Length: 144
Image (tube, rainbow, N blue to C red; front, side, top):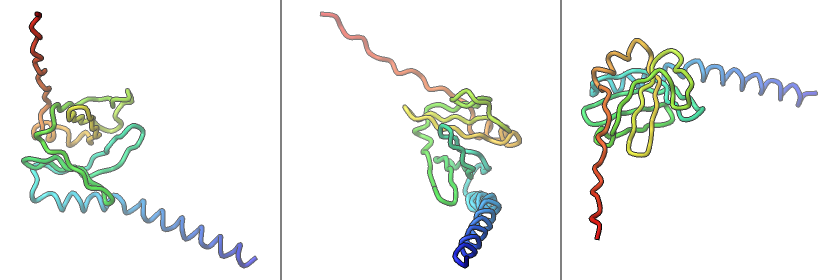
């Protein structure tokens, strides 16, 4: 009986800890945004979408790099490697972007999608305007 009571107490404590972790997770994103704010052209919250996975991230744009990070992960894309920038209302999977617009970045064969809140989309649009890559001309082979 005592072990059952101890197990129940552990489960309640674990649920309480998980609830606190989830509740204060948004504050960690805010802290990451504040850390990046001084050296960046624009900083905001966003949601990184990778297939069916959605992760809240801090987004930042400097003169040469696009950063997206969480408390557990820090990633970046050099602007020189970004070939296309798109703003859309739907994800690549066809699902609508709930609560904002999709910022889609293409780096050669890789696509990165971020859902931006509607209120920050105009600022991102100014700092990182949409663009398409120009097709690479393939030289024709001379027939012999």
